[in-house]
Length: 191
Image (cartoon, rainbow, N blue to C red; front, side, top):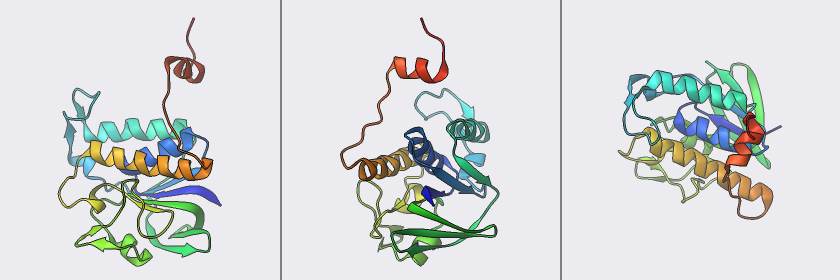
């Protein structure tokens, strides 16, 4: 069983997977690569002056891969369901079980609907941590917002979901805050 299964590999999904894996949780991402980022050029993403959306996606994928995320590229999820204390995610490859589920499927809300998540008009209803009405299931990005479809907002939604999962796992509020020594330790270099 995986700790966190993420459905969708855009900014929200990869952000959730990154934060989870970076902090010691097993994370799996199923990604059909249908993200709107392939039509984007980013000028408004903090820390990025100007980058093609597809190039940004490659950078994000490399980053999550470097933290050990099990990324299933080109694999569609056909169903999600509650399974006791977790979730079962069904793909053409088979079934995958997880403790937590993060839905990051853009404006496609079909999986959230089949899981039984509450909706507020046309969007999935979530709290500030991105948790849905189904315990331990999270929805992020365009599926929870009527018109605020921005890469940076989606990435923040994914991070919020992962931090809430980490908080639940730790039993106390979890902080993901690194200092220069952390980077030197992880990436080398230094004194």
